[in-house]
Image (cartoon, rainbow, N blue to C red; front, top):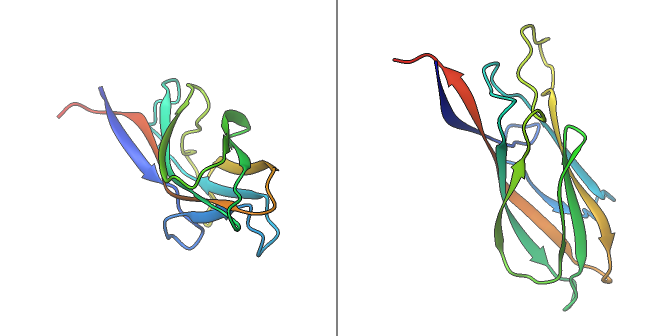
Length: 145
């Protein structure tokens, strides 16, 4: 058996790549949650990497938003964004945080892993953060060819 690198794309419930705003003032949301499944042979004891794109979108000329990411009720990171610069970010997900696919998954079940993007505080009069291209890199064990 050998370990290989693999990834999943975090998606919306309709199967499209997740893309959302935080906070989402149109829907009065200060949190965005997505669920996902991992293969049953994922190496949960090994660290993983969460990568994503983030755009700061100002209101007028103002932008000052702090956000946090949690994965399966574990704090992954938090950051305060005060500029409109597009960012490609990566955060380390420690070992023993991810959950493998259960042996018997009920039909229509949502994923057993939960990722949360939370607005911690908006210090400006407006502006928001746009998240997209969210990918989780992990290791899994496969048989040698």
